[in-house]
Amino acid sequence: MRRVGSWLDGPRAALNNLREQANEERPQWRGQNLGLPERGPGSAAPAGRRLGAFLIDIVLAALVAALFTMPDYPENWSLVAWAAITVIPVSFFGATPGMVALGIWVARVDGATMVGPWRALVRCVLTALIIPAVVWNFDNRSWHDRLTGTIVLRR
Image (tube, rainbow, N blue to C red; front, side, top):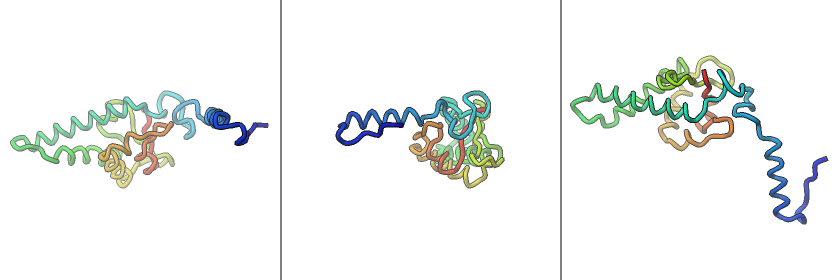
């Protein structure tokens, strides 16, 4: 039987009790709560690959925008190109060009085959806001992943 403790034990005992509970419930690897393998194909993609794929997509979008707006300053065309490079491929194929280059992809948690346009669009908009994309839980799922029911996995 587990000892719960009381307020008479003081704040230090309560803190120790919380730490013990957290250690008991914490999964051993990222994605374990979702039934994902510890490593290899189908495991949760690491943060470094996700960031690398994002940077590749940004550079690619800037190059595409510069190609079509060479004499003028690109203004917001880089953002438009990045949105197109992000939303269209993720909707139908589950990966941006940067994700393909680094061997990761977006999958739906419910097991459906396509991410779909609305999920890809919401992910893109929240990524543009930065904060929802960089606040992650233990399963390497950020706010935009949790809101859209998706996860980024290794290939």
